[in-house]
Image (cartoon, rainbow, N blue to C red; front, side, top):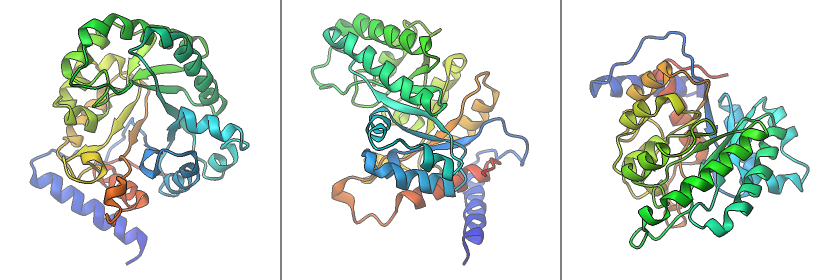
Length: 302
């Protein structure tokens, strides 16, 4: 069976599955959102970037998201310009892990954000996805640290805005911004002129937050989106390619189509753990599955 037939078969199967669950599938029509893919699925290392760019480009995704640290490492190797250009794949942004819980590190974190932001801008990207630092959730006192977290986010957002980069906070399970209360408290306290939101559908559901409700509530400040699915299984930190888990991606995409921001939607899946190397799925197969799910919803690829 050739690859084109496989894609068609997958798309039809996805459409049938979504219909069986009662999810409304809009007929093919003009879609505002373009679908990109993050590099995390291939791994966190700078050495994984070439394979990620090759596969994401070959599958026709409209954009790519890397990591701030990966872009920095590749600067010493001559950059990723040639590889991105060869695949006609624009870099949209990078995930930038930040320490938000220690005020003593605030200035160096702001400097790091600006350093990574300038690298994003070098590739004509526009988004710095701000990843909160992980904490010991059993001992973590959000109330005691809330004002410091907000202050650091405000400083990072303003510094990035000054160099033409949009900062978007990414709520993340296991981090200092995990729960619904933490997410709402932070996003309703930060200066949203400079600190926007990057909702991640899988991370939200994993934390017990309805991703559709979160996106609806914060719709006006959504500047970037990660779409991954979640089933709580043993592989990929409990996440799955789009269309194979519990996230109502169809309804979420319908909502995203109505939002005012000019942003791209990024498919993604966490890499599998070392303990699960027997999983036969590969990053490219996972990306192909997500692509097929989006095609069943009427989205087109290059």
